[in-house]
Length: 306
Length: 311
Image 1 (cartoon, rainbow over the protein chains, first blue to last red):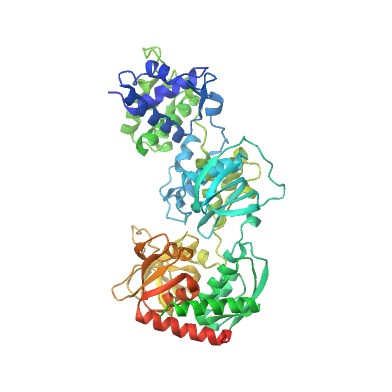
Image 2 (image 1 turned 180 degrees about the vertical axis):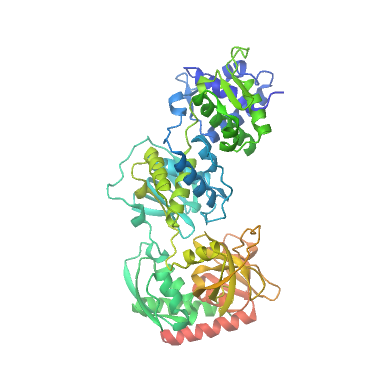
């Protein structure tokens, strides 16, 4: 019995070496390991093997061989298959491997496998202690990064409705990944883990990104800066018990006693939530609308107690 | 579904072949170290390569692959002169790791040039396209990292997460790390004589002492999550969809879930945290059970109403 590894290697060699697209039927009768299967078993096997090739990064192309799209041919272009080698020096590979071992994405060291494709690392380094965990990660994140770098437009389902947009960049903030892109409503931010469905369409390099776009400016640092409410400035007084902590969050010098801070707010809901997390130790003094908003919220919460 | 092990094996083989081909044979020890192989694993993979090749599959169609004393030989595999391209996900993983390490202050000229070379391949202006922000403003995380490296005992003034009170304690810091957007230090806490994890942003003041400690030979994986204790207060809260984010931020137990309401059990050492949470959620949550929490919520609520003026 032939192993999956052998079969996939033979399949890949056949696809790389045949200059024209080949049909599934040709593959079945030519590549070692498929021959003796029933129709159904072959199709299951072939689907699985195509999935393996995709996970390895092999650019498998499928095209219709006739105008009626009855027969499809498969092909791998050797030029597309080949790694674009960044020609890292051995010092650079070691530095990258140390970084890859202390940063986790999707629960696993980030990029250690990919380093093998770049030639591996000569001085083996043990697993570093966890330095940074960049969250769950996902296939979606990789697909989005591909769309961003190849400038392909995407359609994503977000909060129950589809949106078409040109993806500009990805950012990791406060433990979450965010996508910034422009669609009908202009530039918008989407939390990647809340994207329900994604389809990448469009041609490579199909849109131009504004020259002055900078992901670091597009994604705010504080949750209340990331919003679409009219920008206002709120004034808050923090009692001495919590003033040091609020100052640290806001990036202000830590005060001796209490702290009066003026904070730009573009997402009122997020800001009011943050202020209320200090309980009675933080009080908004202006604007008056925000004061009444907080009063309403507290009253609603107290009604919920009965 | 094919197992991840199969994919990993293939991935390593497809990286190994071009490496050996390029050098017309490679040193065995170098290959073992570079690709993380044991000799038995390498022999098995070479045996697999040896029986694969072009249709016909006769002796002249197959690749050659074997270990000759201290050398690895692969031949007749010109279709694999190059490794497969990086997938976007792999490039992202490597770039994100490099950028994060640099953000954490572990930059070196080699790392910076590696990141620059990688990003040049995919996107000319990577700095404007991909950003990872793990900065910690106070500088305490780096001070703690230094203390962990030099095995220095640290005295911290700490505001507990579950219980809104401030204590001073001595800790033996083992590791400093960031997850879900927050920085933590994990180590031995002398106050409770046990392993504890502290949020760096809740350390009000810290002092690195002259005293040193011996770290455990095998530092346990840090636990960032709050572990409920049997003495905890517990209450039951109904969340509306707008308040569902609570599930991501607090270690709660989901009791019942429908499209309109999520019923959770919230455990904490005192009533302060759930009380403030209820006030923050306003109309989006309702306390179902928990008299102590109700009482404390009312107290804070009254104080807030006094500060904001009665309607």
